Amino acid sequence: MRTINLEKEIAHIVEYIQSYFQKAGFSKAILGLSGGLDSAVSAALAAKALGGENVTGFIMPYFEHSRLAVAHATELALDIGIKYETIWINTWVDPYFEAHAKDANALRKGNWMARARMCVLYDKSVEQKALVVGTGNRSELLVGYFTQWGDSACALEPIGHLYKTEVKAIARLLELPKSIIDKAPTADLWENQTDEEELGIDYPVLDQILYDISEQGIEEWSDSLPYSRAEFELVERLVKRSKFKLSMPPMPELSC
Figure (cartoon, rainbow, N blue to C red):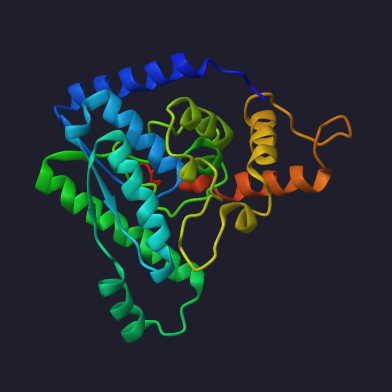
């Protein structure tokens, strides 16, 4: 696994955010706060770059059990000194499924929630004359673990080049709340959902395999690698089947 200088990387990301906002002509940022690690680190970096008074986190729960996540998100906002607002999305998510898709499974509902949250952020971005900051990390982006045009929709991804394990290390260096750093990662798209269970692999192993495939050029598994063939092939499948999600919609060239 690669080794990076975390302090230099934090400074680099902060400078990148500042430069991007300056070039775009914006001074304010908004983002979704889930109470999880990625949004916490993204918010903290945005606050460092732009000042906490110029960053607003929107907490958008659906499930009643999400009140703990709401508490964690609120704790984070207070800890790093940004503004925040809580908007429950069940009040307009439920009517659609009750009227038009009563048999929808958890995946369909989860995707709808992710896109509903992004609708809130983009509406609020107009209201506040702000840019939407993404919260995706390299691990999840490479395996397509996100909702297309949902949580992937943003103006910039400040931690999109960092693996999940690196994001966690930066969170520790930033001294973010331990309650967030130590909790099991979850997109909170359905009750009791966890990322690693849904992916079928733990993040440290996932990150190592992704690093080997995407940066070391390893194309085939061998018994010298520190993970199983099954784990390697799982990640390989995830990467291949989700590549389309990382590209802009294709279009045909002019025929003549």
